[in-house]
Structure formats: structure tokens, C-alpha cells
Image (tube, rainbow, N blue to C red; front, side, top):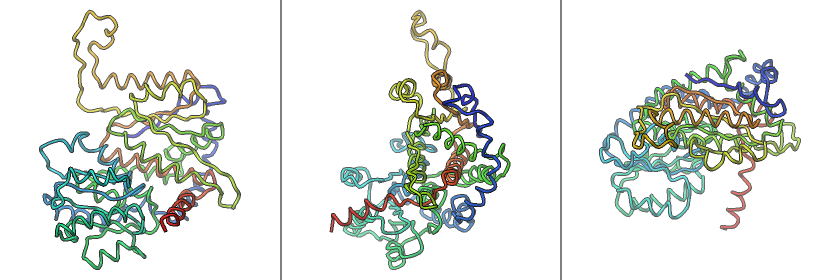
Length: 431
């Protein structure tokens, strides 16, 4: 299903790798850390148990099926990155260009660049577009600015906001909730005890996912599979804990950067999603005792085989301060053979009888071996295929490992005080 291979950590110099004994050294603390995480009352690992929410999402999705050509998500950060990953991982890579549409196109406007805002007008029909506005607080300035823009556009076209808008927001003191209640706009709730970067398996990700034809039941089943491992006090079973311990111990050995490198075009946006999760959760100035610690691991996105030709030179011969996490997908779909057009060309004889599938797997194996020979710590997460079930498990694996990392560093992985200052300064400048 989803396995972790960390044997390469033992193959390299002990200054840069980890032995099984080192990794297992924290095993006695699993129960303690689980208690601390559960005491924080965070919803990331049980938000999808809300059967009423799942029913509500499906009923709404079924009620608007066939009415919209496009779904436009207005959000930023955790309100957008998970949805982008879901669409890229689980739908046709070029789906928006396909003429035969069984589900609406998805556009996620995850920035306030005026080019992004302006140019969406060139590809959507407002009458046939559903806008999903996502903000837990209901007052995220970037998202509200987007809402103002598109609400003004729809108002000028005489469209009914209760038909062309959906709000995904919190319950308390939300500007969006006030507007939604006043104008009968459909709303889905974001629980109070879930942070945006941990919210992909809540209404934040599940609503747009269902609307574009993703099987959210299987997504949830995969997450539950990994949750069982997360909640296990058995070290051998608890994959998220093992990953967190490796990250923590390698950081202590100077590996302050984590490279997430899937060998799958489908998972290119998974790395972007995880980049926010790790950076915002673990980068903290103070621990929970109030001591200044300035801890954090810098996440780096990479893609196999693309970044063999752009980043691997640095990883092989540059500063040995990185921990590379490969993601291998066993089933890359239907075999695509490489034609033998020039059988007498010796330079390419190794490609004869080889498929792109085999080439991808072999290049990943070669890259892994090169890093290992150069004493660069790396592990491989191996999943059977990229589908709803396995992606749900991947989301939960990294959310849970991040929660454990917070406890290992003795910091709160669920707040983000460092983000607030720039917001305050922006308001002051604009005022």
C-alpha cells in the first residue's frame, strides 16, 4: 500500500545517516507524544469522520451537477494548495483542454497578482461559473479582495449570488458567514480547531474535489488507513512517527533542508502542499517554555526526473545539509513504449525494448544510488499508484508526521505567529 524504505540511511557515513538503533531511540515516547497531540484538540485526523458533512457535500454537488462549466476557487495558502494538489494528482493533467467535459474545469486563484485576476476573464463564462470562496476567518484580505472583484462582476451581470457563490468558512465572527446568511449563499463550515494547512481533508478540499468528480470516499478511506498507523503506539506500525524522527535526528546532524522529490508528474503539486505544511508548522522562534530556539526545517520542492537536470548537481556535490525524501509510484499507468527508430545507433541502444514507465523507475533508482554513494541521506516512500486512496494516505502521513515533529521540537505545530506581523504592516501601509 504505502511503504517506507530507509535502508540507505544505514549505508552512508554515520555522520550523515542514521542507524536503526538511532531511529528507534525515540520509540518509547510515542504514547507520550500522542497524548500531547490529542490534548491540543486538533481536528486534522478526525475532521473527515463527520458523516453529516460528507452527505451535505454530496447532496450539494449532486444538486448543481451539469449547471457549471467552471469552478473557481478563491483562496490562498492552506485554502488553495490542497485543492491544487487534488486536481493535479487525480484528474487528467491536461483536463482543462479536453473538449469532452463530464465535470467542470477547475481554476484555483491562489494569489492576488492582477494578471491572474484579470486573465481568468478570458477563459470563464460567468453565468456558468461557480465561485468557491474559502477563508476560515472570513476576513483574509487577499481572499476578500478577490471576492469583492468577482462579486462586483457577477452583480453587474445581474447574476444571483446564491446560485454562483459558495462560502467555506468558520462559524464565529466571519464576514463571509454574515454575507452568506443575509443572502442565502450556500456555506460549508471549517471547524474552529483546524488550521488551514491541515484542512485539505475538510470541506476546504472536499467540496471542490467532489464538484470536479473526485471520489472523496476513497480519499477518506486512505486517510483513515494512515490515521490508524498514526494512532498506534507500536513503533514498527507508526510510519508518521518514523518519518518525523528521521527528520528531527537528521536536522540535529545538520540536515536543515528537506527535499520532497516524487517521481510522478501527478504529484508535482503535492510537494507545494507539503512545503507550506512543514515551513509554517515547524519554523518557530520560541518553544512552549518561552525559550528562543529559532527552529525549523526548510522544505524544497523537486520533481523526478525533471530536477535530475536542475537540482541534483547541488544535492550530490554541494553542502551536505539536505535530507531527500523520494516518492516512488509503482504503477505509473498504462505502459508507454519507447519506439526503436534507429536500432544501429549504439548511443541509445539501452533504450531498446524499454518503456517510459521503466525508464522513470530506473532513473529514480539511479538517482537514489548516486545520492547514497555521495553520503547524502535519503529515504523512499513507495506507494502503489496515484489514486484517491493513496493520496489520502499521503496527506495523513505528512500531517501526522508534522504533528509529531512539533512535539519533538517542543513547539506548537499548529500556530503561525510569524505570519501575523506582515499582515499588520500591510494594513498600516494601506491605511
